[in-house]
Length: 89
Image 1 (cartoon, rainbow, N blue to C red):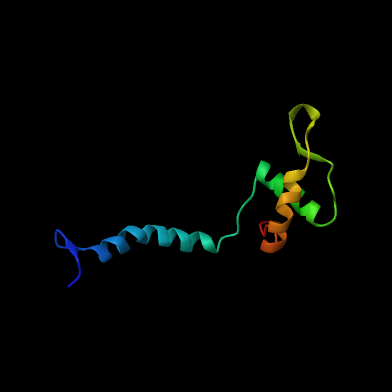
Image 2 (spheres, rainbow, N blue to C red):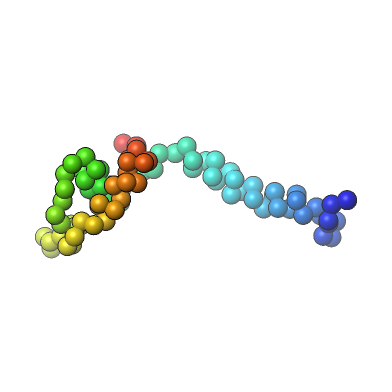
């Protein structure tokens, strides 16, 4: 006999609680991420670094200067290779 709390089966309660999370995961697993703004510029810089362009400066900032150091671009190159890069338009 399954353990019940106030007449409700715990397993059924757990399944009902997790159902929205499972539905969200199924919905978003097949989607191609849409990058915009800073995330798209970062993805482009990582892609360029992965394909042989070696930047000497970091992110571009306002007022005509770039942040020092492109270490973030180099750090994300292995993840770019593993994932195949962004597939968005």
